[in-house]
Image (cartoon, rainbow, N blue to C red; front, side, top):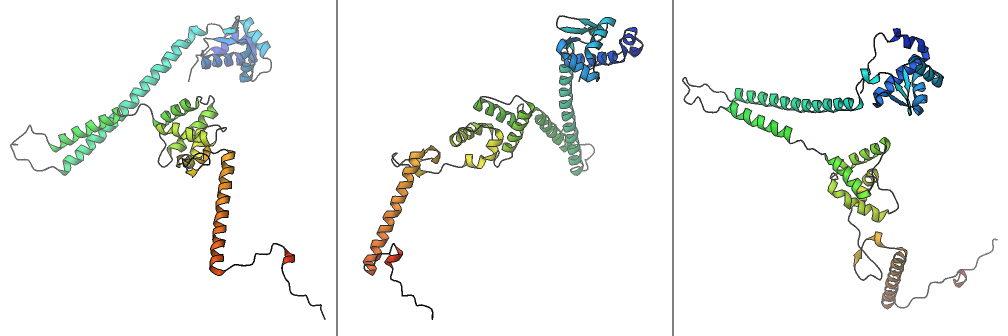
Amino acid sequence: MSWVKLDDQFLNNPKVVRAGKDGRLLYLASLLYCGGQLTDGNIPREALNLLAGMADIDNGKACGKRLLEVGLWEETPEGYCIHDYLKYNPTREEALALREARAEAGSRGGLASVASKAQAKAQAIASANGKQNSTPSPSPSPSPSSPTPFNYVAANAAEAASAEVSAKPEVREDQRIWASLRDATGSEPQTDLGRGSWNKGIKSLRKAVPPVLASEIPELIGAYRNRWPDIEITPTALAKHLHILRAPPTPIPKQNHGNRPVDRSELNDDDWTAEYVAKAETSERALRARTAERSRVNGPTEPIPRKVEDVDLPPVRAPV
């Protein structure tokens, strides 16, 4: 968040008074625009309509001309510039450096807070342990320099807390999955909506059982491309079909390829036709073998009539 400085006597300034009501609104909108975009007080000419919309005025060009006349704006080759903007406001470089310094200070403060909480927790555990294991000590103590249970527990707890703070992973697994998807697909979303969709899909992949790891992404994308080569690959699509992509391929005999088991996704139209014909021929041979065996056991049987006229039907009696 950026800030701009405004004098408490702003409304009494002669230039502001001569600018009029709409001119004052346009000037305030220009201050907010330059402070938010870090333009060092420069206003592109094409941004005048945007500023007029921010000020909720209809005569943006006339007000801009009026600001030039009273000296609140100055004309530049690219558009306009707020008079003495950098005299009271930081430059773009100074504002960015201040943001970075504040972010770094906040990060250090967060780590220090985590460490202090862990230390307090360690001391509380050690204190409770010391109370439970406390025994009457003889006077004088035979070994005053020997470590007590309290010191031992406190040292170990503090060491564990320090290890917990220093063991924070620099890159989370979902970030590794994002990078793996980007490398495997050769692209990544450029809009907020697209990035939100990717994050949602990656979260679904992480919630799977077992969770998807970044090392598994290339294998899943390869299986997806084998099954659906013309469909776009997204994390949501991988999560939706994860049970299919993780399933091992079903081996079936492939015609004209020997007895090698293959994946059904490798079969083309001719292979599917050959497989259907082979199954039909196998079924026909099995039917013939069962018919021959039945004839051998029960004797020859009359052929099944194929037409209605081949069947001898009893005469139909006329109604009385």
